[in-house]
Image (cartoon, rainbow, N blue to C red; front, side, top):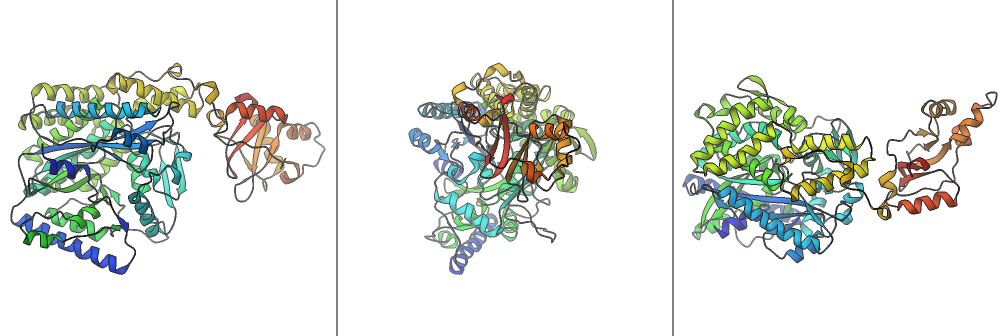
Length: 628
């Protein structure tokens, strides 16, 4: 085990003490260091200084924290202090933490050893969380995250997160847009990068040979789609059913520095798969990144890379690492130093957290096996496969999971057929070529095979959610899903064996029920400029007893009740007035986090049968006597 490599993997952003580039002088200094880093990197490559063996693997585990009601818990900072272990670090949102595993030499029982270390560290986190009435959940996107948990007060109070948020907003000069369409649709603006913090991943690291960089990196790109299809675990966001791996779309948009214009925008997103096969050297790869993405942040530099080389030291490439930490390839290239020797590795960022540690290690082993099992026929994959097929495969996998079809060797092939008949045998060969214990290979790859033949984490979640929505409102269904996930994870059942969530697996304690748990969010509304006759007929057709009325700014302006409808239906000769004249404007409203018992009392005291639910002046739902 090597402490330098450990430190590097734990801190892939390079520098934790950062600040926004705010002056021409700061930019000039930073760019000078960045260019010297590239020059030093070119020199290291030309001199063959990079470590090629032994090969190491490593991983980072991001996880969510929930309270006793299965909602996000904002005590991450306190839990981190109690853990008091350098393997752990904070994340952007208060309800997420990350642990970094010590890297291991690839071979033997390294995956079992990594798995054991992961479980031991997670146990430490769970014990610390218990002291704060919190629990640890492994999932790509926590289903119970709502708008409430995406405000500034849920950002971890660390300077680097504030700086990054401000830097991205300064470049965009506008709110960040989020538009994801799947079975349902999310379409909104937001003023922070906290949506990025909804994503939790299991990031695997694999050291590579720089002299075979083009072959290795392009192969990682080619296999990404089919591999992702079996790993998906993030289908729900804000109660909406979106992509099988919604993280791919969410992460891309949540830190996007591009803004919408009437002009065709040819720039890449900072989170991207890439737009072409790579060519040239590792240095050329980084040069492309510098060309495409402007630097967001800087730090203090004590020396520069060329000076370090003259002193006989391996340069840290501080400026380049910092730049690399603000661009997010799904297969990201990372530089590090081991035993005073530089190394480079691919960081696989597209695999989600969960559903269990067994599933995660199996995903990682499958990836490493495929990386080392590449047949000679797939050398120079960039000459045999169109890049857009590789990219299309990746996004098809994100959208449809194991329901995707892929273009492979010029043919359209199902996910199951490609994985079972081609990729699994390839992974076995790759693992055996690296002297992985056969029992270990069979243990973890059998998990992959069983999952291919049954269901992924995302499909389990979707089917459970649809089933629960037949008997439960969405907020309660989401809590049941998280409670069930926790139960299955603690029992260490791999996801292929998970039965669908049942409504009796969790019930919100009566004293904790809120308006948000029982309100209707799919509410038919009207505007105060609409035809009154039409609105009254709408209420009659749909047997709606209460219709919220919105103004030109889509703020809640009034309420029409069934009493108003009956009055005109029973008196057909009456002239129907405008909605503004007949709606009630003196409204009693509630907020989503109001306790249900308080809402009942409010309705009873005021002799009313419904409460519009608002956030500021915006309608977010309605709760009626029937809901209570």
